[in-house]
Length: 566
Image 1 (cartoon, helix red, strand yellow):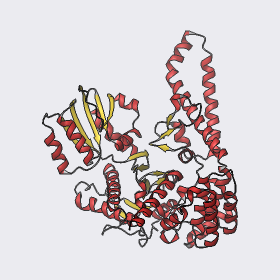
Image 2: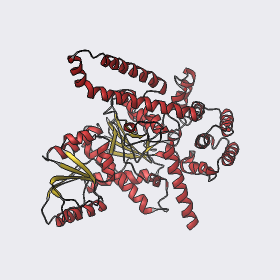
Image 3: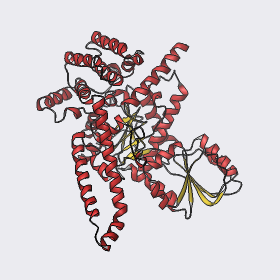
């Protein structure tokens, strides 16, 4: 169940069976799908000398090139293709689509191919971005739509659901599996997606999903981001999650152009566990250990550099020239990680994140409402704390104590509004409407279920190893319930009459509204325990607190304007 290799195999198959010089033509979404698993140099090795977007208006004839199209089967892409085939620029056209096509689309393309340049048309089910072996995203740009009730914007919600169903079905087609499907009972959007996926896999395209049965069917579990609104609001202290939280990662690339004095070749760097051994070994390490490991890497590199300075004979020189590409690569890698960690340290210092994060973790993990109120109020009065950090602290307090101390929560909200004009708009109340205690299924704070209460007491007695990484996402409990066969049917019903017999060995958990890299780390660590169940995590986007708040603000704006229009 490894996603990256599944997508890589599809792309390799597309390119290696077509000999000669090629142009690869992609759309805005398949660009991401290809770029996270294939580097430019690997494309060159497959004789791809040009990459273009399908909407490009170029008219230049290149009949010596063979065109390989890899597109999502959308009506816009079919229209672009129809026009391009009707007046061909390239010698041959090889068409690959990332998901199931409609018969009408195939007919439209066949009718347009008057010059008979189309050599093949195939479906290759890579309709998702495989950012890590066990983690995929659909990179949905309007991710806030999942928060809107169907009455507000029915067609956008339908488009969102359709895209998610497409992505999930492609994952299972790539894995050659048909799952039993469960969903979070309290979420309308999770139910809609789960039922839509079941209809596709068991009715509309049942022949396509008719793979050799495994003894125990895999499980698809569809959950809602709003069941755990705490995880995307927290600061992160492990390498990959921290980079995404403080700088931002898009398609495994980090944009460093805003950092002063950065060399030109380091303005955009790739952070991929497949292409960078140091990153693979350290992506889940905490910030303290990471600093020590980077120092070790720098020391090792300096030793190599010193031995290269000691060139005395022709043989030494020849050896240096042979090893130079590897030396350059190492140099680039060392400076990339040093730059990254230096920048992270600077942001932590500027935003006083060590003290902010300690309070965040206490709000997420341990009780004590009086101390929590005082701590958050002190941060609201502290001039050196940024507006967004104040907002996140009030939100974390609100999620924890909305029922316990409504009066004090109102005091914090009023103080927040007086400190920061931007947040007068009741965003905290909107978050509670979306993801407050009455809306959630899971035991987010470990205080509903006797087993969780006992576990929290045990953790409190033993103490925690690291105060900054003591929080565990709700997903951790969900995975534990699945591996122990304790996921309650009443909270996570099955779709249709396809039930699970025994404990599943393969599970895909899809989070409507987006995943976090803290959750991806929890999945990687769970898979490393060899519990007999392998998990894959997927979502409509990869969140950090900035993206989560932006989605919240956008959903609030649309909800308000639709209420005013009534």
